[in-house]
Image (tube, rainbow, N blue to C red):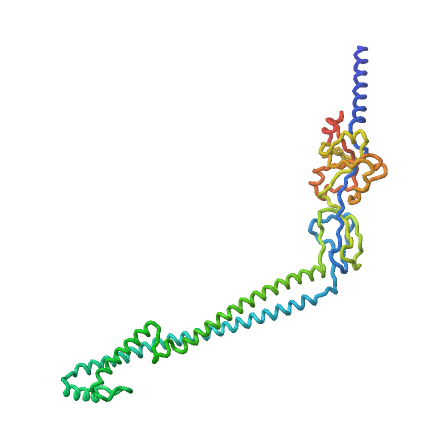
Length: 391
């Protein structure tokens, strides 16, 4: 019984020593700090700055308006000139459109008159041909030999039909002249049906149709001018848009947060006049949260980029998986110029390690615990199983 107690006591002493040595000798950082890059928001134009009153550390969402700049004396002369030029080009285009519309209306009216002329001309030629055929039939029906025929032709012409202008007085030529008139009228009617009008051999279309053809040519020229005017209007409009963008850019406007994070520092007061490029605000990018730690030389030399690690915040039992992202070594002061938390002197005397903790980045602003300290462990420890059981 006595030996059993002695053996159990020795085993307890060995286990305790193993736990103490294991806990102390396991690879762990001397210190670790939750850190994040700082984004400097600069003035895009010169002007008067307006910054809403907000507490330092206030949360900002990407795209949220955090400030505004307005330049009351921006140069608008070039934009005004282009706007006047655009109005003149638009007036020219409207004038050509109105002239083209009037010309089209005149041409349509002339074409309507042409259709009326054609219809009535066909009726006229048909009527004249009908009467000419009637006279010819009367003359041919009264046919008689020689002398009697000539007398009867004279009687028929004098009694049955009125003489037409240019109709011969010689009785022997009356029948031939009647046949000629029938043939001429038949030719004129056939030509009119094909939209060709014979007018003593000098014209094949009515005056209204000729004028409509001239107006069609004028319309083609106006259409070309209208196309040119529309192209000029579009070109000037593009120049106006570009100049308006430039003027709006110089005028200023809202400045939006480029990241989701925290308001870290205000570099310019509300209402001051700033120049283009002046730093205005500094924001912490909470979506790029990282952990910066310092380790001993022995542990540093055993690490490599991509190695797995675990990070535990001080005062909590929650352990986050981490990955070694950068090994900066000793004296790594320069890499902290754009980070929220600068290293202490003791930190710089050791070896710098940067770790990526994805779970902190996924928490967004909630996980943006800038400045919180903890420890990073690179090896397993004897009491890890117990820590996993604790809440």
